[in-house]
Length: 233
Image (cartoon, rainbow, N blue to C red):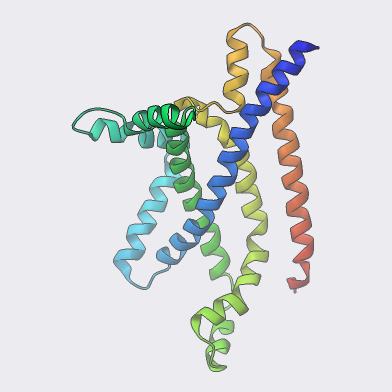
């Protein structure tokens, strides 16, 4: 019983890091994804194609490789050869007692950029799915572009993108496990540490945390879809 409680406590600490990474990734990637979607729809062709290529590259390269690039590449390009995220690790630990802070920030950068590109395509598809006649009608009524977007287009776009967005967000929950490859102590990394000491069952037990988290998100998105169902024609 004591062993079970100790494992649960350790996994909860790792799960706290998982949840923090999940929340912060959404906070940064959703607005960034919206911005990128506007840039990929820009009428200025160089901007449009530059960001389309960026989205293509980010979506085409595995997230694990992107983690390695973000974490290791700055050190490889540095004249000193020192990894700035490793130095940040040391600074945050000795100044504030925060473990693996630099590695967490590197992970957050990689995750935010990756998911921003995926979200941007969802946003773009949602915006372009709205009939152009609605925009033209708004202009006839004397509305500005901002008013048309926020008062006419936005809620219709939100309704249409909820299903694909919910899929990506649920995928993000599971992708957080990749953070362990650069040493972030999230829940799977904690379970791995137990496995290294011949205690295998915490690896399977960690799956319960993911199932509960995904279950809560599924119920939440189902509730949101119901609330927005009045936009259905």
